Length: 468
Image 1 (cartoon, rainbow, N blue to C red):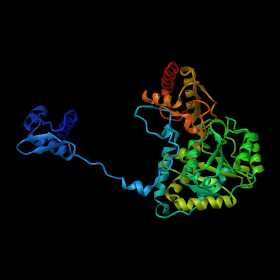
Image 2 (image 1 turned 90 degrees about the vertical axis):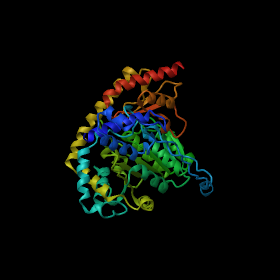
Image 3 (image 1 turned 90 degrees about the horizontal axis):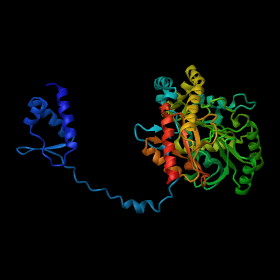
Image 4 (image 1 turned 60 degrees about the vertical axis):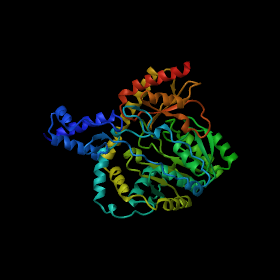
């Protein structure tokens, strides 16, 4: 008998053991040899494997038995109660977009594009090349690899009469991490920050960790009303406004140039900063407006951009672009927090974004996103008539779906998950009470051909709630 026979016996007995109570006696070696047509030596090999896996116990002269699980006593961590002191209030819980899902689910919950929309081969080749350079064995400057700083500065300054210098860019390990530094530098512990409602949940979380007082203002796909921003700055005394002017998460809209100029004028009147989170710069479907930071010569705009979603979740690289004392203060905070960003990741990112393959990837991406977006919108229109899309996403990765009044968005997400559709309830994107029940759906996930199935399941869940 060969090794495959041993494996066959092991597999068969593992299945038998899984259905048997601890202490159950296994069939004799003779009976197993007859059942599997194996030699006694092969049976012994299988029994030895099962013993090594901790599944059986052998008692000489008595027999072989299904092992009883050992009796364990839970560790006592009660001493930590006194050492830790009073409980720290928990920040906002992570939304469904950050949670694992049951395999086989239709994934509309994530905040990332699926691998099919990433430049995978380019990233893999770049990482191999980077590992062969001196970056694999050295540390990076606190502000980042100079060539990558220059690339980020050039990106935000394209067409500008007042281009940013390379030193204005601070390389960060993903912009979620950077938001904490920006908030500490510009707002301070316990300060006030004006923010759109709804807005990016990660910004809400970063602010909560610093005890920042959020000052929400209503927004639309076209952006907030400058008059509302003026009121919020005046009443709160806040000196910073966090926003996503291009392809806002979750609404998907963008500010017009006129709206952007009006908001910058309002901020100038109050001596306040704009924290411009340009998270979806690489995910334009038709046309992406220029960053507001492009023509900012006075250091009014602190610009944040990430490459993590564009390249790979494994390449957590981004940049904060700022001028003047604000830049120095942010850099000091970053250096205190993490000293520097892995030069190996920086070299990989630089290799990718300066390659011809990256430019080809970006040229092909809008059509891919448009096809997925339109398929999801058509599926919702046909199969989910009780809900409606709040706005046509001009770019980014998401559709913001308004549910019928009286429906609980979180309960809807839970019920859909039980039916094999992973969704993200919109509550997590509001810094105050939600203005209604919403879901955020990612059209850049895997298996877009299953969008109609997902939309039909969602409608069934909504109808159950409405009847209930």
